[in-house]
Length: 385
Image (tube, rainbow, N blue to C red; front, top):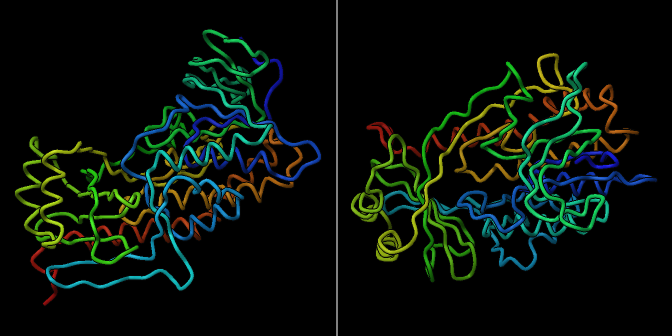
């Protein structure tokens, strides 16, 4: 079944980047607001262990997008900087005066972004799996997407529409995350494969007092990757451990034996108990360099956004900030475009964006790589001569 009327834009993925992009396009000042389709496999609250610390730059981007209220009602905690601990020494790295980040449960933040985006009457939520990009048989320009519906959809009919729905749009924006199903299709021969650099092993601590209130804590244990702590709520604290190479089969026992003795004494017992009794999660940490889009080797009528385009180590918590700043740039650039279907105008904006985003993306990507390398405390020269 096809939609009777094309949307101005179709956004695939209602995570951080997709929800923000849908809201930004929907609220672009125009005599006739753009109609946006926001497609998501499941609009239930996601459950992830990354994307839980938003840097001050990301908070500022939310403010510029009019989405700051997405932080309301999710018990988001203020973050004023980092407390770095090595052996018995510690140093605080504070954000600039007056700047503050936020930490939270990832899923709750995503639900907040979706809530703000879907308050716009010109944003239509469609729950289902985006299966295939629809292309013009002559020009191969992307025209829309086939969706296997999961739930009732308000598109053209209030009742449940079973099966497949083909959704057309003047512009298709792919924001389906790190495991993107469409990256290779959009980028063609230009596509790169994400490189897994390490894994994050994580669990949640309860009723823990960190050494410095409102500061993320990073511990540099000998012979192991960095270990981070930050509050998710007043009672819950996330601990993550970076593990390079093959993750041990008995990762819980490995961490209790190797990691716990390297932590500050005030944290040892609670970490041991958490890794022994709580749910322990694993997530690959990947690097993916951005590829210039809207070129002769990539598809027309579509572009990638967020982790589907670019990834870096999560150690600096920069991924969400990058995505939100990208949305800020794009919504400003699109505001003077008469129609998102006009690729002769949209294409050059996407090409300029590739270079313009380097002002914020390159800084965060290089900081992430440099910080990760510096914090790998596993060489004999780590402490200097």
